[in-house]
Length: 133
Image 1 (cartoon, rainbow, N blue to C red):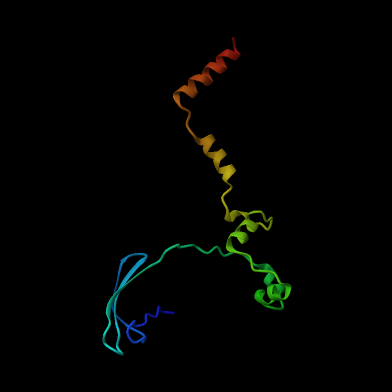
Image 2: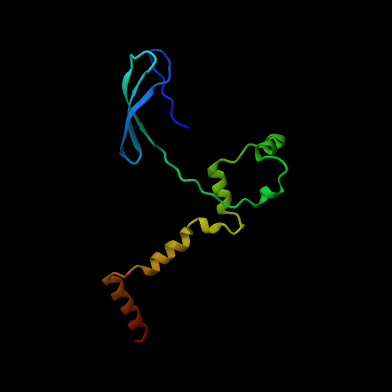
């Protein structure tokens, strides 16, 4: 579906003459009105608040006799927001935890991989030698 821009003078749909993409998320176009001929304007559109969809397995759909929308309407429940769905997945034992980073394990791995400073190495040596005295 294309974006429809209407003429502010007569209300008709405008035509796009030329368009360029100055950047990945930005489009600039020249529009005019073929109906009244009074409009020639620059249109600038930008994608903002870009989010990436997370697609997950949905095995329960094979047991449905009605759409999810119909089921929610019948039960009086509201649909989950994306944030609620992600939180549910993070705590779900369905085997899809691989979608999320285990922040605690990642922090421990970084700590183990971190090089010790010269002072930390010196303190460790002193601790070892103190045990043997």
